[in-house]
Image (tube, rainbow, N blue to C red):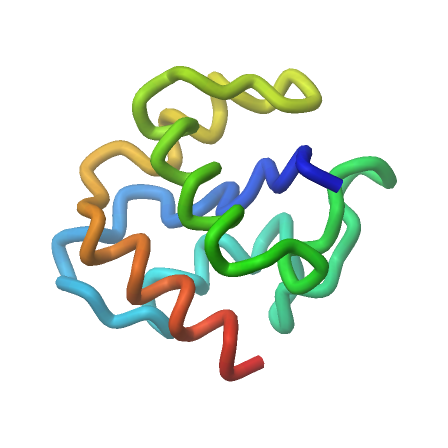
Length: 99
């Protein structure tokens, strides 16, 4: 269950320029994680909604820093999270909680 994501995977392919609008930022994540963050990606990566907010936030930070490679998704997640700030991560988290 700790293998988050390829989360926010295609988490946010280069969207940070729009600021911390969680709904806008999450649109790119939804490609892999589903519009309601409930998709089990590649039939092995837990749905984002099944992971705690604290874990999702930690995983995004770790992926962005290149410190996480759960399910071999580290490289793609690092690319997808590039340029996003901690504020952006929190906005995405807040949005996921509303789904």
